[in-house]
Amino acid sequence: MDAHLIVLAAGQGTRMNSDLPKVLHCIGGAPLFAHALASGDPLEPRSRVLVVGHGGDSVRRAAAEIDPDIAVVEQAEQLGTGHAANCARDALKDATGTAFVLFGDTPFVRAETLERMARARAENDIVVLGFSPAVPGRYGRLVMQGDTLERIVEFKDASDEERAITLCNGGIFAVDVALLFDLLASLGNDNAAGEYYLTDIVAVARERGLSATAVTCDEAETLGINTRAELARAEAIFQTNRRAEALENGVTLVAPETVFFALDTWIGRDAVIEPNVVFGPGVTVESEAQIRAFSHLEGCHVGARAVVGPYARLRPGAELSNDVKVGNFVEIKNAQLGDGAKVNHLSYVGDADVGEKANLGAGTVTCNYDGVFKHRTEIGANAFIGSSTMLVAPVRVGSGAMTASGSVITSDVPDGALALGRARQVNKPGLAQRLFEKLKALKASKQKDSR
Image 1 (cartoon, rainbow, N blue to C red):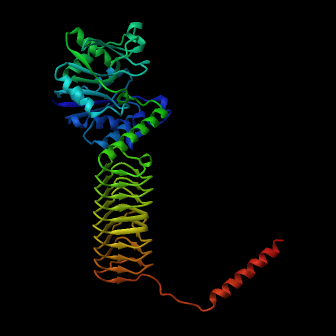
Image 2 (cartoon, rainbow, N blue to C red):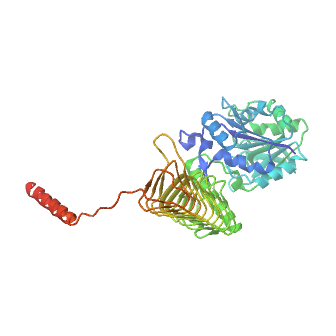
């Protein structure tokens, strides 16, 4: 069955008290709407449509970074969920199959739930997601007759009898694409809010003799984000779930409650993650790697059996091959480190290619920025970079070459050569003692004058 995702992300989210559109607030380092899109990935959708409104340009830019092929359409006026879904009409005018209507502020719908909805859609014209909360509150109610969904009624429009129903509307729909837009065209807005409700398509469909049913899920899957407090709770839920998933997949978390994951973090089996590690977006860690305490990783790849940290920072573009060692207070950015390379302490390696088994001593810095442009440093295999070497890019240190500690390297070093880029040491006998005596006398004189 061909699937198409429509994600409604046009709301302003006034209760967030933010200049940022609600769906751009993040959980696990990814905007809320990205979680909704990710839940539909196992359906292998042929198209994805994002309906934007408030802050639409910002949401559009964020969506393009996540999926350059996503169709973004605008809901210029906020006239209800039915009107929002109908904004996707032109984007899906030639589509066939099933449209799944999701909400950009509901991040926890499981892929398995959508797959169950897809199976139910094979036997029904409309499938709606339902749930039974501990406190039904002001949720819309699903009015069922056996397995048949007769209609959905919003709480503010519901009778006392309908409010007594405990099966509530989870908001997600699975409908044949052409049928969805046909039903949306038939909606009216004769209700308490004067809006076009997506939920009303069920009643319209039933009046036509079409079939509708509900698939149920846990209440936790339907959690919507409307406030900062809800966002914080959602982050906690996300992290708890990801930690449990990592442990289940054979990852050792020494102190699980202190490790923070992003939506797309991938960690291989038998990797060890020590306390207080933060994974930003775009991180892959291969099997048997060790990420030591207080390290921060983002946009990087860590090879098998590599060791990172403690107190290391891997920035976007850091590519660590197998058996690499990156130690304490080391920062790597947009650099490739070959198998077995070592950068063990107090170094910055940016815009560089480091050969296999090269060893960079403490305090090594690739001076990659001239104030306008970035330049690359190349370090060959088995090279040895002495402590406190400044490598002024663009520069190449050849394979098996060596730099003397404290050198400033401004030109290429041939393979196997030793480069010394420092001034010759000169000792002045007794000069330090005389200088100290002079300075102490000057200090005493100033103290006397100030009395």
